[in-house]
Length: 131
Length: 131
DNA sequence: GTACGAGTTGAAGTGCGATTCAAGTCAAGC
DNA sequence: GCTTGACTTGAATCGCACTTCAACTCGTAC
Image (cartoon, rainbow over all chains, first blue to last red):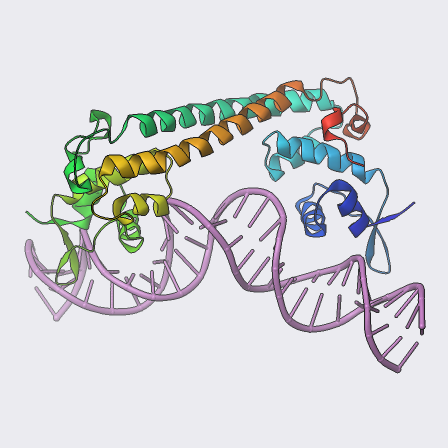
């Protein structure tokens, strides 16, 4: 029933180093050992699935740890997720706004006929002006 | 007429360390010196304006250097910008797609009634399943 | 002459999420 | 008893855009 780290990595599509990293970071509980080697219960795959979902959602390793073990045991997964997700959604909206701003700058800048970059200081948009 | 680094920093809204960093990175030409101190011509402010616009557009320092000095002198600013911007826009669209995917995950996950995180392995979406 | 403020340098540090490395441990097969 | 292969550890490395640090150099004012 016990899985060695290589087998867990293969099934999860992760590297063994990533699994050790997650363990050190507190995402995965330290498994039992047989002659120093980590031996995992297959339940760990469920936990890894959850970890990967949280990371895919944009949570940092630290935030994911908070989701997994940073709340009183009485707090349900749904409650934890809602709390963290609303924060994260705010961040993502900020990032979207930032990306849209970048796109505007990319599309709108340097439409001048200047021959050299040095000449472009003149034709810059007002918002970018420096004293 | 000459500006010391502190004055340039103040006018540009940058730190002196950032200006030295840009110089080392090849974004700013090494200015003249008076007793070891950098003395800038006020034209440098125009160049800084351009650098900040490129960085605001999402270009890395390296890409910004390419824009400023990585093309034959016959290439106009508008041509350089178009070439680099189309690449960058592709990257930004990928990032937007990634952000939208994150938002979906945040909104759709953990709507279960599980009391403990360990129970949630069951109620995960199929796309996240691990062998 | 000495204190002050602004500048100089190269090296090291920051945060993130891992990966890579060297050197060692261990069980199984031959 | 020796090789093989999978594992173990802690430490170092990566990329990015800077910042911070210590130790030093200047010119000016008092």
